Amino acid sequence: MNITCVEVREEEKIFFEQELPTAKLLAEKLDSSMLSTIRDTEILCVFVDSLVTKEVIDALPHLQLITTRSTGLDHVDTAYATSKGITVTNVPGYGKRSVAEFALALLLTLSRKIFDAYHQVRFNGDYSFKHLRGFDLGGKTLGIIGTGQIGRHLAQIARGLEMTVLAYDVQPDPAIATSLGFTYVDFDTLLSGADIISLHVPLLPATRHLLNRDTLAKTKPGVYIINTARGELIDTTALIEALNSGQVAGAGLDVLEGESELKDEVELISGGQQMADVQVMLENHILTDMPQVVVTPHIAFYSKEAEREIVQTSISNIKSFMKATPTNKAQAL
Image 1 (cartoon, rainbow, N blue to C red):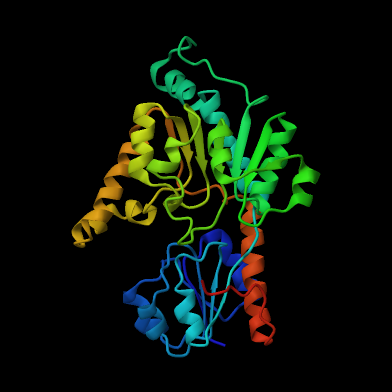
Image 2: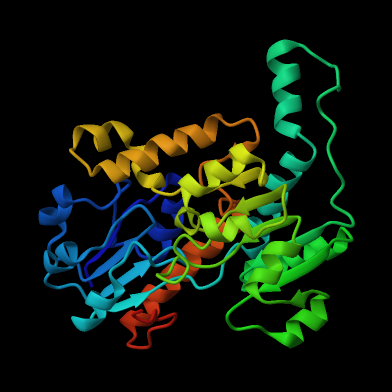
C-alpha cells in the first residue's frame, strides 16, 4: 500500500525504514502545498502539528487509514474521516512514566525555585539564597484531573513523596484508587482542596477551558497548576488574571493554548489569521515572561523510551490495518 509519514524526526527514521521500507518519509508537517504530491496516499501517518481536516481528507481520494503518533486526536477530523469509511487509529497509551516524571519535574522546578536559582547563578554570578526559599511536597495535596495511565503513574510517584492525592475522573476506577492510595472526589472538591493541580485529560469539547475564570476562582488561594496535556484545557486569559492576583501562585506549562501558532508566529501574523489567534499568541508571550511561570516546548513525552514506544505502536497499527485486523481504532466524538 502507498504509505506517507509526515513530521518524521531523524531519530524516528530508522524504525520506519526497517519496518516499512516503501513508506514515503517526510520531515515537514502536513500542509496544503504537499497534497498534490501525496495524492495516491492510502495510509497517512501524522503527528500533532499536522492538521488532518475535511479539506485534506477530500484531497486524498485513496485514503483508507489515518494513524497518528499521539494519544490526542484533536488535530484529526475523526468524525468526517469515519463518515467517509476511513479508519483512524492512535497510540492510546505511551510514555506514562515520561510524562508523569516531567510533570513532577515542572512541579519541583516551581516548588524549589530551580529555574530562578539557575538563572541567578548562571547569568548574575549570585550565590545568595535570600529569595529562593521553596517548599516541600511531602504533606501537600496534589489534585490529579484525569486518571488514565499518566495520571495514575503520577499518583503513584506522589504517594511515594508522602503527598495526599485527590483525583477527579468522569469514569473513576475505585479499585485503582485503593491500590495506589488516592481518593476520588468531585471536581469542585478537588479544586478547593488541592495545593497543586495537574491536568491529564484529552482535549474534548467538554474539557476545553476546563480551567477558566469561574473554576480558577474555586481553587485554593495560592494553588500551583501543572499542564502536560493540552494547552486548550486552560483559558489563557483567565490564567494570567489568576497569576496576577495571586489566586494561582505559579504554573508549569509544557503546552500552551494555540502553541502551533506560537511556533510559527511570523507566518501567523503575515497570513492574515484571526485576531483571536493573535491574542492567544500575545498572551502566551506574557506567560513565558512571568517569573512565576515555567514554560517548556511540549517535550514531556520526549524521552528515548517513549519515542520508541510511539513509533513501534504506530508501525504496528499500520501493519495490523494492512492485515485487515486494525488495532487502536479511534472513535468519532
